[in-house]
Length: 154
Image 1 (cartoon, rainbow, N blue to C red):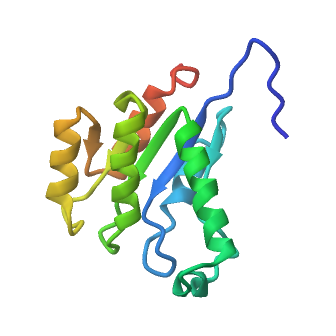
Image 2: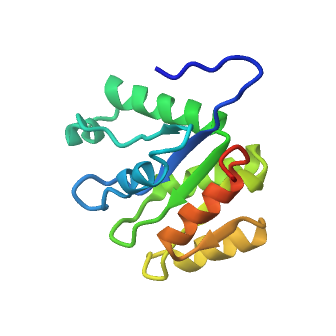
């Protein structure tokens, strides 16, 4: 349990990016490990009980619930870390990045996109056009995210 008493705030971080079970590395765990000793709430959409058959149906309640959960928390999070794994296509991640630019201050966004990602130039150019911090190094992305979360920036 995390109890927050007034007037304190606990920052929230949403981990947006490549999941594609069996293809993408579990970078979300690396991010959780990085922030392990900090007072922060991390929203991690990677599920241990994911069932790939959910994607095969045009309507699946579990998948719909997952999408709604992700949308709610990505919109409410103080910061969002996007990671594009070169082993994946990640069209939903690209859609979410575009959505975030429409609804939030880009100061809340950090993007990691290595040059081997199939749409690297699209992501890099999009970030440059919208003044979004991006890097091709996951470690740099974590450090930048740490610096952007005011209550963690010791």
